[in-house]
Length: 282
Image (cartoon, rainbow, N blue to C red; front, side, top):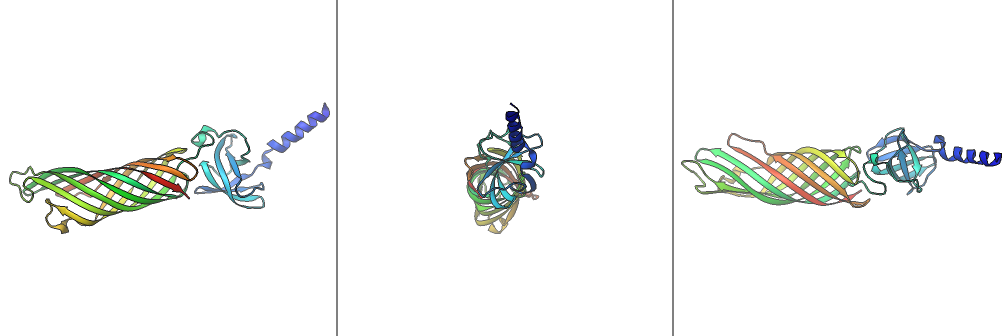
């Protein structure tokens, strides 16, 4: 009986002693440095918080001695947390942002393609011209996301978009478009965003904002007969979106965005963007 007790105590000490676990010494973006336990490239580990709950899954991408660099596949980690080899030790805590075994969509750096439906509004108030115009268009963008941390991401995007709107001239003495007023602009669009991941997990919810530069490639308008009046413009964007994780490598990005053009004494305009696409994690 004493021998069994001693054997049980020895095994318990070896398995559960925290000194045998590696610690997270550095967290940078979607990568961590583990220190204190030998491991190999490709091995996966759980990250445990101070209460011993599993809050992340990481995969080793570099290893040397008792130090290793690992990429966060799911959840988030902090300096001082411990790690545990992922060998059937149960599922992750829901505090990691999702159920165990599922990928946290859009984690880390990524790139993707998105199609967009644009709902456009323009109001013009000038001598002989009063018109509230609206319409729709479409666009396609390619983007690249750079993870500044697990919560904050920078995005750059570029693509082709169409602004189209039309309406009636309600001025008492109409000039230019006497009945039908329209604006049609094909833009080369460039955007820069910042986004904050409000909810982590396989369905990542984010809030963001940024600025766009719209360069007209072609224009036509009965409201502005002089094409020189339709020049390059800026647009300020506020956005909410969701990244729907499909696997460790892919996710579906969806966003609803509001773009506001700088107003002038005669013109105000805005766009509502509804975007969806397909993306790849790096």
